[in-house]
Amino acid sequence: MNDSQRVAMQRDNPDGSVRVIFAHGAGAGLQSDFMQYVALGLAMNDIDVVRFNFPYWQKFMDTGVRRPPNPMPQLEHCMRTVIEQFDDGKPLILMGKSMGSRVAFRLADEANACAAIALGFPFHPLGKPEKLRVTDLRNSCDKNLIIQGERDGFGKPAEVASYQLPETIAVHWLGYGDHSFEPTKRSGLERRALWQEAIDTVRTFITERT
Image 1 (cartoon, rainbow, N blue to C red):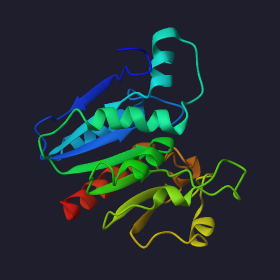
Image 2: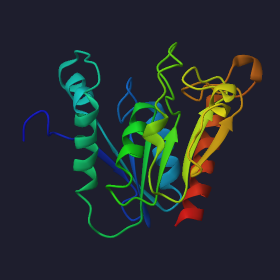
Image 3: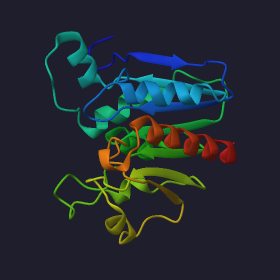
Image 4: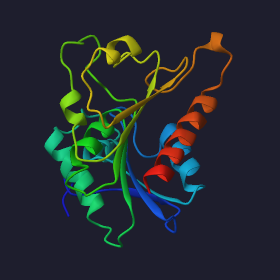
């Protein structure tokens, strides 16, 4: 297996009755504090969570040299490779943080997933609101979920309200949260409060879907 095919994975609660394949964002891999916290929080609720590294991040872990994310076709190929390793018939949810959520939504139909979930969807590049990515959100799932911080520079409430999102999209806003679900100091909240709210929202959504 060459470097482009290598996929490092971490699985939490393999006995869970529902499988969530969880893709990381552009700036952190499967072992980031956020990825671990969310994965373990879901795993405690009868959910089989599979995290993995995209090829560019695995190369960074192997060499210490940072690289930009792979092109979208390579990101999709990597997540597809992870999906194809499981054929036990468990209900499947695809979930991602930021960039990873774009991949999750784009593959949902192909993977026959029950739903796609975005934790901080990058509706547009920073500072470029005209370059919308809402077409990534179209799939055949009955319902999909986006959890977004109210201060997210990739898509704030007023912006998102102006978009013509698919009717299948439910958006849950995290008060005081940014793109990383970090609250302001003035709010008096700790980041784990917002991270836990995200976990609870995902858990409820999955329970209703499966």
